[in-house]
Amino acid sequence: MGLIHGLTNLGGAMLAILAGGTNTEKEAIRYMVAHYYLAFSTIQLFLLAIVMEQHNVLITNLPIAGVSAVIYLSVGNRLFTRANNSSFNFAMTIFMALFGFVVVLNFFGQKIAAG
Image (cartoon, rainbow, N blue to C red):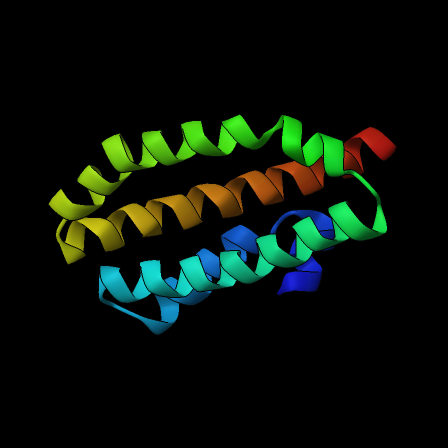
């Protein structure tokens, strides 16, 4: 999944599908997604910093991580806490359906554009 995420940036949606398909409790889904993303981001940051020597870009964008954390703590975590398992699973199902629709639409759009 990490390879797919690294090459296509589609691993996150696949991870949501995997997590939602293997767990029914919203806490277990969030736990699984968080741990996979920890691995994804650790490897990606290592490659950017060490292999591609992009230290300055990472440091320059560090304030964005802080803003993201504030938004999550003030909005995202509150929504997660208020949602029950059935509404969370319904939202995940809608997300997965929309993702699948966009991927298929993009695939056929590229085929049509290529002729």
